[in-house]
Image 1: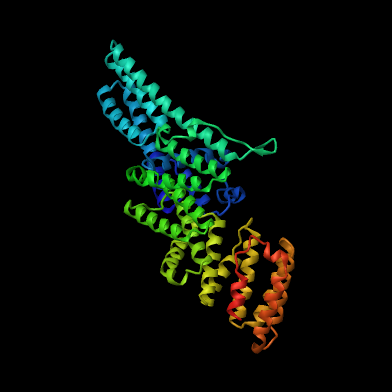
Image 2 (image 1 turned 90 degrees about the vertical axis):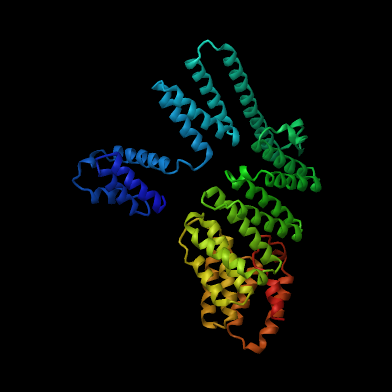
Length: 468
């Protein structure tokens, strides 16, 4: 929970119950990084509620969820619609039908405007119930409402059919030794998709379908048409901007993979302007994740194509954004960004800044971190200390890096070459540096596993050439 959510819960809890045991238990749990029941029992020793602690915890959980529902009552248009439907039920049970009609009108506006398909079916169901209560003999009215509901059910089925199609196309199943050919009329015409959700599924299905057929031009055209379509409905994207950012990311990734740098950077800038105009903020985790992915792709482009120098102001903005949101990010995302920052500053020869980011990664205590990232961070650490001529420290890190590699995955032949190089460089005079870098270049060029390692994040050849 965020600080504001916790603050709201304390107020809510104080108003909704006179028993402050729940608040006391909440405060005790909030102090813990990981739940430890023994600590809780020790803290509240002698308290009556400990006799049924599981009951208290369960009630506290329900209270927290109720508080969060109230706090996030407008988290989405779907949540707002559900609130109106709940109001409708309360008013209907009191036979306040005119008030019901007011709530129904608001609910119908939300359901229709934002294509909330299951919500639309519920709204129409309430229209029928109210019509029966107010005008019980209006059979023509009932018939019109039932037909309207049938149309809503058909729209829901349309989305369902496109989900089935997307899953079938994306599965990439192999049957009988060959690729599975998906044949469906739903893949042919965007007009058959009756809602935004269905259209997103349509274009993404076409993208995957044509990729599998190795018709790249048609595949990328599907993504381009999807992004263009979305940019034509900005009012809808305010409700679910993550959908737009995700689609842009997919297209940018394709451009980047096919080395179409001009289109990749052009689309990145266009999308930034677009969601800045919408005043989109990364408050929701789903959107934050897509924005982070977008930033990561952009950093990769700058790093891979050595465009970081002219884009340092933007890179520093991303650094600030990542650090401000680090608590909301998965650990793997956070460490990946830190490595990107470390490596970019290394290429800029800002070695003190490089070590700041490197140390953040090496001092991280989280489990299940990518070992390839940790290994390459240690290699970058050695490169940085060599550049700074910290020979004594570097010799220590060579041994610790070797021990770490043996422990987590074993040492590859080309990694052995690199470690021997760093060990040697801690002892040779500077006028022999060039000779040793040339030797390293030749040894790596003759290493087959170096040429075939697709997981490499460090461009050793670029670094070696800088010293030659």
